[in-house]
Image: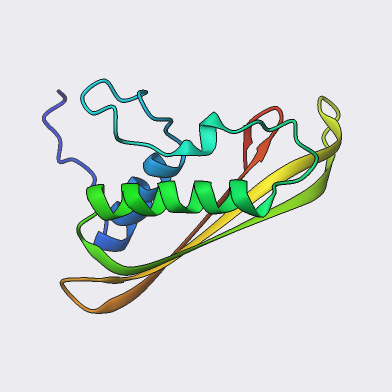
Length: 128
């Protein structure tokens, strides 16, 4: 709109942005494709801890979404950690549950490894 060049990013940055969108989008949230997203947002965050069955369900859902929508990477491995972390903010003190994701893969075009890490606090949701 201002007739300036659009800021460009690297291939790795572009993939990272796309993975972040997949991770933080619920199924049905994207109007143009209801299959974009993952099942994480269908889970009950009030549970004391994530059972293995829930964790596997989330990882499987995210893996399917990545395989379908991010064709620039292959050999994808996804890890999810659930931990308690103390928040020292004046507006939001106390313990919160945090989900941390590590996604490792290989960029198909260059055979270069890529590692993407993301995390956010849940119950209530807050980005890291």
